[in-house]
Image (tube, rainbow, N blue to C red):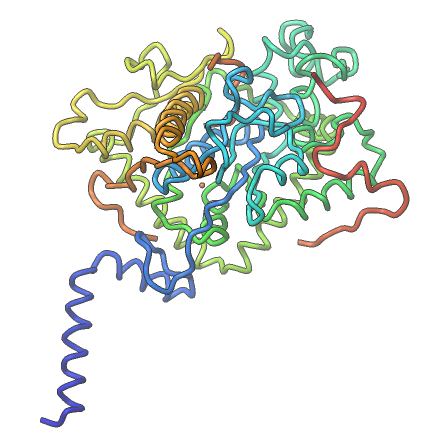
Length: 467
């Protein structure tokens, strides 16, 4: 047999052996390439683009942002990254609703790779804090459903809601200015909350179209991806491509959800009134919802649909592994035995549900697998506390190990395990106070003249700045 034939036989045998050895992974990868998708990796491979690890996620209110935050916390721990966390005086948020400043960041969480706790956005302050190659991401939600959630969730904190007779959303929307006070504490929950979170002027008149267009354009310049809560999985597909992440990195369980009895059905006409009252938020949502679908179209509908399906299948396997072969049941806080898993309750009128792990989880599970399952369903306040404790311990250990001549040497970090999947996942985002989150282009140019200053994200507004 000629040397050429011997070489070809050797290559064929090697290829078959490789495919048999990596059967599961290759089947997913080939399925993705068949559709023109990038490889759905579960482990790094030579020559592939490395994962992007410097991310600033603006956590907006009542938008599934708590679920996204949990995803980012777990990614940081698995990949030995530092998460910027608030100083204890700020609780689990960066002293919201004050405009963000780096002084709100706990010194034991510096320098950060990821930041994801609630803040009022300040572009200048974040750019001063984060690495130069940081990718900025946020998430929006349809204004009418979001406002109903805000009205229900914050009715005991926001005076604009508390003074409404019988807690009636309908009554508020008939005469919003009768109850709303722009300068009042927590007024940001009662009007254009997304705009406020993004650093804009929540009380800018709806007739000021120039400001609205310029503000949307500025958001588009700063944020590489604006996710949409109603299309969370599709948004995660775009995030995965943007950051060169794996399927394992975007698995999640929905967190911070209300019971059906805590939700109100919107009567006909209310959505239109809500959008009119929150006109800036409505403009933001409409623009970036359209932008999301343009990006998904560019990626390829078939590719996106396939990735979403693979994501949901892997997610179901992970949850069944964590919950004893069954899908998890939502439980009230009183039913959850592990206090580290009890979600914070905003008031007696709203029930926030969570999850509890099976008592026999330790049977046949490694400690790493148990930790994964625990972190997957851990509420925001508790996870923030746990993460700050671990990063502070790491900081102190690293400080003790630092030689005097190298004061800026980075501390040794512990790494949270990748999803051991509890079986292997097949390849393919302090003191409790009001929490948030539930359990996506064309660029407009700012108008000439004096519009520049008012379109800067995070610039202070004389009407809305709160101390």
